[in-house]
Amino acid sequence: MDENVLTCAKEVALIHKQKAPHAVICYHGYTGYPGELMLPAKLLYESGFDVYIPRYPGHGTSGEDFMKSNSTMWVNKALDSYRAIEKDYETISLIGHSMGGLIALKVAHEVKHIAKIVLYAPALLLNRPIPTL
Image (cartoon, rainbow, N blue to C red):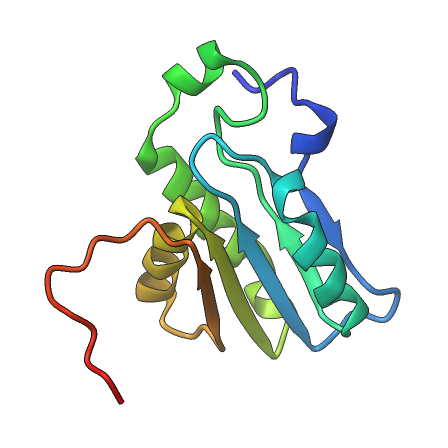
């Protein structure tokens, strides 16, 4: 599985020569791929952050690979991407697009020390209204 990763789907690591004190991990959505998040990744990198975009198993290869993958594998990949860099940075923030938003919340719940989270078009269903400020 995942042997033939499309170029646009390869994992991304934008790391400054002198490693930044702060990193951002960007999580893509369902059937998405890392290339979808390159614009925010480049902007964050240019703003001084080191940026990582992991690729979930079964994404960016083939439909057959996708059908062999599952949500547990995707969440584990997201957690592994955090754990791989957690000791290298003062802070780590998360960005999640669509299903990646749900995965970002799961990672934040598991690791408990996320600096900030940005969710855009998150795949969430709320069972009550969001209170107004």
